[in-house]
Amino acid sequence: MHRDPPVLAGPGLTNVADAVTSAHRTEWARIVAGLIRWTGDWMLAEDAAQDAFAAALQSWARDGVPDRPGAWLTTTARHRAIDRLRTATSERSRLQRFSLDLETPRVDDAEDDRLRLIFTCCHPALPLDAQVALTLRTVAGLPVAEIGRAFLVSEATMAQRLVRARRKIEHAAIPYRTPPAESLVERLNGVLAVLYLAFNAGYGDVAFAEVADSAIAVTEALVDLMPLESEARGLLALMLIQGSRRASRFDANGELLTLEEQDRSLWNHADIERARLLISSARGRGPYVVQAAIAQCHANASSAGATDWTRIVVLYDELTALRPSPIVALNRAIAVGMRDGPEAGLRLIDEVAAELDGLHLVPAAQADMLFRAGRRDEAIVRYRQAIELAPTDPGRAQLTARLRSLEP
Amino acid sequence: MQYLLFVATDSGATATDREAAPSVDAWVEEGERRGIRKQGERLQPPSDATTVRVRDGKLLITDGPFTESKEWIAGFDIIDCADLDEAIDYASRHPQAYGGCIEIRPFWPDQD
Image (cartoon, rainbow over all chains, first blue to last red; front, side, top):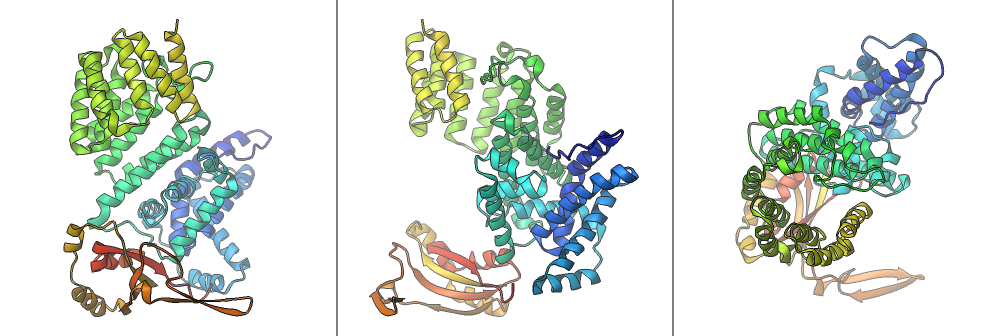
């Protein structure tokens, strides 16, 4: 995660920078969440938290890292919030300051505060892109510029999107709370979808690794806070397994590699093991748990040839029963092709092709199956179609490389 | 927090959706019992609307609604709720949420 504090010269200062970075990872959400509950002001909370981390760099370098960095940061952030209100001139701020001075915040609600924060950032009354941005900014503490880069917009545009979201929370009185039991499952699904979107925005390009890491960090917090929710576990496992391939996804020239082409010794096996524990400890089997189990099958195979396609087909059947979609049907068709032979795969791909018209994944899958069936000329035609339809440069480059390897 | 509910039409609703709509009397009764609903009226159709503008100091009167649209506002309610979740919950039981849609708009705050 980002936390690049300014580098200070001198002995021992690296440790201070490390301590601040580490505290940022573990304490940011808690501090911001507590300040929001206390002040009701999202911008003030973020600014005051930011102030506290900046102050820590100076103060800890001078006086040493405190025994309880989290408590130090919480207290400092609270003082900064009061300072900021004191210098603010609006009527509302003065009223707010008056009520704050009288009420001492309760510290024991810290865990609930983080949950409140996550659920409020992912409230369905906010636009989806704002939910993702707000979660990355407010819960994970990622800098606005960084979030903007991952979503291909300028820092100013992203800042504006965040301002509008915070404003709507205030103006429309979106409540700052964990949803009640009757809507919890639905709202949690919304949160998980937002986190997976954030993860994928960061995962698509190595330059945005911090966005993916932030999504993982928030999901980890969610698993801690809601240990009985199997789908949160499933999503975290899925992210960890996908993230475990980070070092092997691109070749020396920066070209995207398929699972089959990747050097499996570069996979992060500690993350794969963490994912295994998460999957085995999940009490229920929802779509994320099953998707994680599929990813796990790939992660467990010592080589592409050793992949247990029989099990993967069974898992895709389970996923189809839980959440049918044309994409799931396509992936199942590919798995069947790998289990029973390419002709079987091609027949099933044909069945779903109409529903996925215009999607590059269909001709890409057909090309691969045709190649495996020894029908090279037809494979070349399909690769050309896929290249034309591919939406991203790395994807196009990957398909082009495959095409070149087939062309005489 | 006060909200205005625009009770609007929506061509996306099916006959089955419309049949599932609860009665408006129950909705009004609940809103009054809980002290949520302050006021509300049905409106005549947009063909009865008149729109007024002043441009260059001159009064312009046009027939019809302020914007041409396939959908229109069929009524309104003013409600007072603790927060948006309560407003969403109450609005979701309005019969027109089934046959059309309800837009929830917070009032501009008194002070800021």
